[in-house]
Image (cartoon, rainbow, N blue to C red; front, top):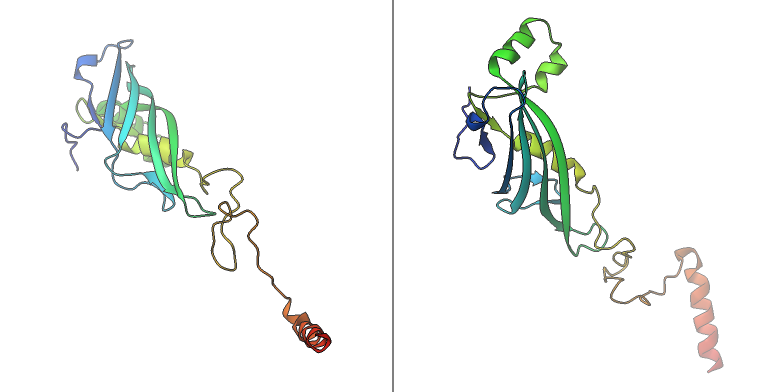
Length: 191
């Protein structure tokens, strides 16, 4: 069994909260983003700051953690490949069950789907990283763009169309290319 490291920035100690239902504590903390906190296209870079605003509440079953996270994700526009910086917010609420309560819950017949998604306290510690990942990563855009009306890149030469809105190429349909040659020959004979 992996044990939580209390020095980890996303591991929180609930000892001061106690086990008396109704006890509450508010925390604000800025932590560094863990590795792979996003998708292949956009994500919060490892080590970038994540601002957490948490409310820890002691309940009969464990500790109810309600909070929000704010960070800046970076990536590339899927249309023009320019860098994109995007503020992301994630909100979450998760119950971290006391180990004895979680064991009892499994004993009395909780179904497998419930126990897979169950988060438990390890002693007085809980790890917020999986909950934070579930709250922030799905809120990232699937296809980030630098601006809503980004025209992208020219399909012929790769030029960024936002830099030159009048950019275009004379493209002749290959089916009409033979006729184009005839009109060019006719114009040369006239001159």
